[in-house]
Image (cartoon, rainbow, N blue to C red; front, side):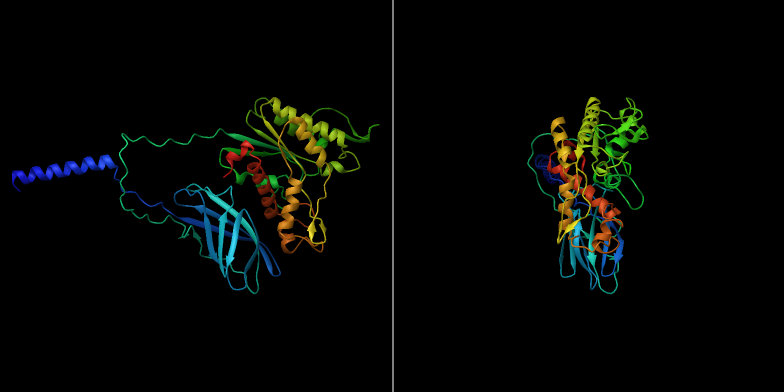
Length: 401
């Protein structure tokens, strides 16, 4: 190559470098996709079954997802929760709900459904996430065609999302909220998975408690006073409430206190009996104590049992008005779980039923009674609370997955 040609080649190369800098020509890669799926049949009865599905995202973060699989011959899907599920022929398409579409790398999303079957009920072995086969590994990325972007001066790194401050959710309630490893499982036991890792849940709900026996464990007598209220042998608080009030390890500014009573409180006998005036008084006590520590109380009406009037589930709890009025008086959010749970039972077609809580869709949701939940039922009730947080614009909803 002569001198003139060398100079032209160098000039052309330099020009290309300048143009690349001016127009920001880069070689981008496609988003890496990959996933694994855990499909579990949680309950099965003649002609029907319940299943839980957990997706693990092994690729790049996604802001929405659709999981696909194929039903075996004779299988169908009747109801679903925490996802919108449609069936076309034998093809199933499960799309995220409004609150659980964002899943980071290594993150999980889950949903459940009730299905039908004839003959055998095999577990599917092939799934796709947003069109990519779930093989248990990230898919190979594919280079994209380089695309120019106008030069706007020196590039500025994208800001890193700020870390959310840690939040603790404290829970006070009865068996429909309480932790358990087997039936009955309270919805509080299934609540933490709805939130990101900045949230921890301290579930101090205890089965069989009214608001008064929860607060004054062991100090509520079997004797009623002239007002018809159970008397206290001591005004000393229970260890669980003292733990929440502890200045060092208890409720802190920014924490939340979820309070759900009103089921056992309607007992006519002491020690569980609580009259409406006393019930309201104790809700006020708890709300003001939380506020004094900078925590944010949320009142929750009692979750409904399954009670049918013909083809419709109907309400069946007391203390609804008292809980709502106390929320207004204290200026705290109210989640009407009673109304939401009745609507859920109707959407799932749990009525009519013959009172057998061991089989069918009712058996998949409830323990062998009309009140307490199997794990699948508890997850759906917890989902109602998560949905309410978002719909009511309660700031805690910013931590939902």
